[in-house]
Image 1: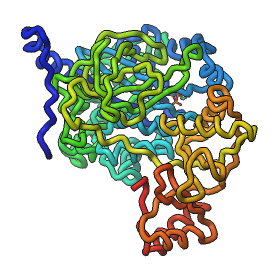
Image 2: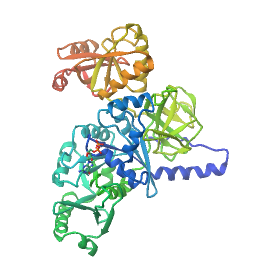
Image 3: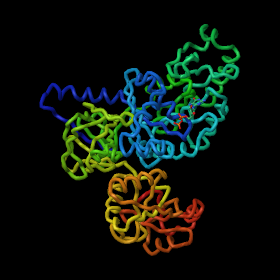
Length: 555
Ligand code: GDP
């Protein structure tokens, strides 16, 4: 590994310069930045609310949804959200927990699933995989897991809905392992008395936690009785039968799984696993307690010149998401920046390394559930929104101290689209506006543009093709093309998908791409890519066509 890039700052006040490294290190060390990955309905919204409840960010769980409703119709954007009854945007929620600053990056889940969802994971330092105790790993869980796993992001598992009978916990964890190839290491284990979920055992502290179900239906923090397995207060509140069963389970776990291995966890091979119920709050607090201890704080991030360590005093950050048109009066955009190192201060001057130009970050915003609030400073691990007039792009690097030939963050991948449409201008006179809009959206990362011919460009030739990860991206695209660029569009589904990029001899690529059941496209950089009528056709082409090389993402 190459040496860390040094971007230290020197302030005019020597005392402040001396104090800065310690402050940056301290703030970085107490950040925990994570995202929840799950399939719709596993309970992500409910768990998010309960984490905020325990973090003291809200007093009565349920208010996240209520606020969401109250915020409707504040912009064009919201109108679309209102029509669809979903949230288009994602945001970051920050709360305090026992001296830690926890940043929960919201990943849109339902129909609003998009490339942004994947990219948000890049800004996180760890992920919590939330599973329904009856369903285990589902389609969307698997997709999101893969993104984290490839990047070696440490992953926690939270088995939810334990207030009702589900799959046998050991069987469930075994299924996860078979499906995803990750070993689940139970940190907490459910205690079931009769047929009731009454508490969890924490294998790290070796404490039993029994929860008292109040009259408040999960809207308040739970009263908890805590003690060792043999403590009298535990025996008083739990049947001997349930405790015996727990002892048996624990023996099985000790034999089967041995000790928790932090190295394997940090490498993304072992998942600390928790059981609970977001609805009744059971197991939420023990999860948080262990989570802040086990989860990694912000680490170094790779650049073209070597890693940048969080403790570096000069601010460095990267743009991982751009969201347009949040305020219809200004037509501005919000660029979401993950702080990698140093202190981000209001009004600070930075260098945008792509252009070499100076960018004054006059209005850093914290974006809490889409409500903006100006903030004075942010630290490594934090995510801030910058109001942008179209200067920033996804993957951009911002530096407070920019050496000659400055480093650039290198790891913002594009993700292969899953759906493809041809974009036709509903009004032939507006083709130019349509192309301008598509160009802008493609730069923003809101859509990926492709062409049916090599060397084609926006603005001429046949209609462009757009790829997206979720269907909603197309709706948003149509809405924005019309409202922002005055270019109403019609979409025509291609009926092909499962893209694979190809490299090799040009003639050979054209031959491979002309076979029935395939179509050959070119991405905006001119790289050839083939789409297939179905997954099976793609698999068989990869097996048979060995004269070209296949790639899952753009080479
Ligand atoms: P999301 O789609 O993942 O955000 O899921 P929600 O949080 O909206 O929850 C989906 C459904 O599952 C709702 O009806 C919740 O009330 C329910 N739910 C969430 N957590 C639990 C839980 O711990 N136990 C039970 N029984 N239901 C839950």
